[in-house]
Picture 1: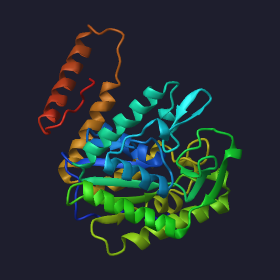
Picture 2: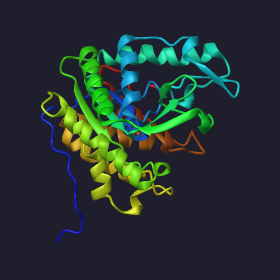
Picture 3: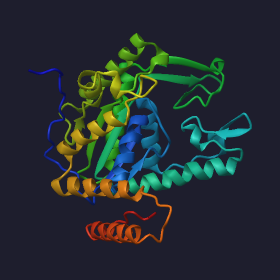
Picture 4: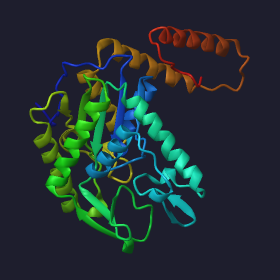
Length: 319
């Protein structure tokens, strides 16, 4: 007897190899997945503009990275004595204009260079809602806690969403490797502040638009992450205390499913061992001179060296 509806990710004919580069952009779920790639010691860059949720702003980010277009003073506004880019997450806000611009433009350089060598792009859309900053008549990625009276909220039209997705694909195929694989997902995180009915409408528009755009396009794929959480992990034990965000158990389950479908056997083994090494590195002792601890560290360092010999890029560089 079956007591749950299991959602699988179809096995890909293309596999992520140990030396592949993975670029991810989008909602906080994209960051969760990217963190696991990093723990597995794969080469990855995530969200050069910070966490972004809607297709229009994600497309704007990809366009700026593609063009290597720097931000200038005219692109910023001031609020609460900080210099702010409405295209970016609050992580980029500083009290000094040159510091904000340096942080923003350094990420554009990093993102542009990484994209040129990227094998895989993972895009996670979170919402179809967008805010327009009324004083500048500008659609924004983040409101930076500026009072609501300065913004007008609306749903992106289906045409705006499909145009954004299509233009994102065009820019990625132009700047990335010829065989780049682009994976689209919809975040399983509910935007409850929009309202439950409105959230469902928002997610439905995203799913419909992705399928509409990528149908028939080579090297573009849909990952049913939203469906996995909604229909497979539909139990509150897989959520954090806010009952909105998937917890670590759910994220690890999704990552395992993704890995079986997209990682080569060598990559699976490589990541599995690196996860074990990371766990061992968390071990602390009150007596660093304890012979047993010294032996433990020597064996651990040997395991790290074995892993390092498997790749050209640096791994465990902070250890």
